Length: 488
Image (cartoon, rainbow, N blue to C red; front, top):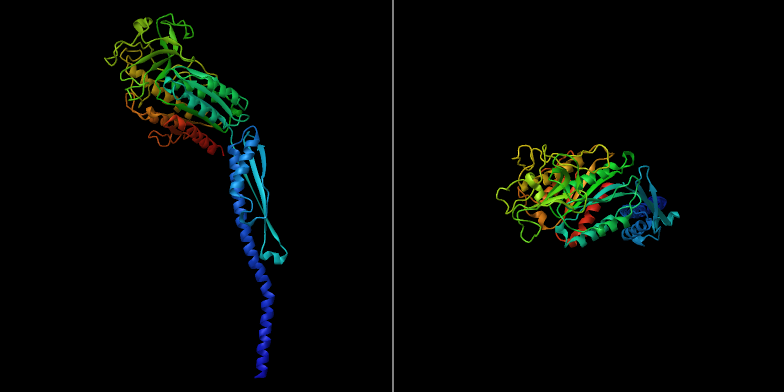
């Protein structure tokens, strides 16, 4: 029995020796797992912080990297504050590196390193654990035609429009992005052309916006044509990764350009030629109808505003009651109006005319009607329809036709995308021969996926809406955010 007890004690002693031998590596492995787990959590959080900082820097990149750097630092601190997860030291502010890609795009790299004290790993003489993370964000450059409605219906809201538009322009890079500024009402003004070199002058665009006055009708089609022409004018190899049209308006298209025949003479400032019947290159303006309660820009019955110079600020070439209309006016308007407005004669084929362009290969005319579009009457057997609502329909048709041509253009380095931004409840009211909303037209122009006429073979745009002028800043910010999302 004594021998057995000696053997038992010996075995217990041996077991303790083995426990002692294996306990240290077990503790080390356990400690390693715990500390490495903590390190992994720190690494994940650090990666999230530098990723968010890189995206923020890309969103706010300008010619001066100071703004982007400040925003990136703030975002990094919000995601990884000092002492987070027990970290004892941290590279804060993080490292930021700004590079330019071969295509001119901005490349922003953010990196940081964090050190945290260990627990069990101290047994193996590892007092600290260091983890690193970096993230890169790339921002493709933008060529943008910015189109601003300055029609008379915006008179009261125009200061808010100007302020929001300036703020919107300030979100783009003045040394790398390109911006053309187009304003329109009865006529279209190229306030700031798009240069072939990169960059734009924010102060000049701000001055152009500040000097713009609200008056006249809504010649959306010609403004879109000018926006398209400016994007096409940039040399193929120099075009940016994103080619954008941003259209702001508070109403539906109600005016369109053509080559009209009137009695001579016409006022100076109106484009003419020596053709028979003295054709005038001008824009017919009509009213929006029927009357929308509370909206002074709409009329219950037909109203022809006259023939305006296409590229001026509202020169009236022929007024609705001008006696020079002579035999070329439209005739009585079917009892739809109390007076006999003058609608100048437009020979067949019924088409628009666009006299001003700088890009090669761009069409200079488009049909005023295509199958499925709003109908046009032609009782003069070879001339322009004799009632004013046909002119209104033609204006709506043409704006959608040109927008479709813009989105279908494959001559550039990249396809063109259109965003539309509408203001006010007039866009939600049924107007025109189909009693359709302006919002539905703007969705078609943008090829918004929510439009029943969405074309999946073209780039998706989007329609944004601001109910009141004080919502414009937020609405423009949403447009910018969508452009930025695509630029990554």
